Amino acid sequence: MQGIPVLVLIDADSGALITDGARQAVIGDPEGINFPWYPEPLSTILYSGPLLRGANEVDSKEALQHKVTGIYFSAHWVCLSLKRLIEHNVV
Image (tube, rainbow, N blue to C red; front, side):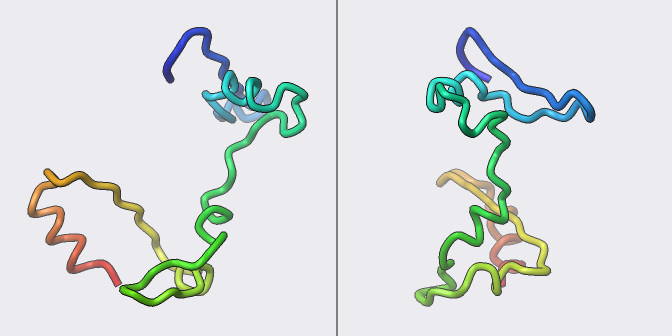
């Protein structure tokens, strides 16, 4: 979380975090149309368009459904052993 004030929304029944970015949500949605601003499910984001497999586009839902999916973000300084692990396990 960054900035003050901070507005965090928690589900009263489960105690689960809904969002820790409610302040920005209020600014972006002052009428509260999308309240309580649940985050968009990752599947919705991932299935929203094609993915690239090499130079080819593939249907994201078909490529990812019923699979374990890892999302890896890196920088140029990533350790070599992790790079090798990813290279050998990515299909």
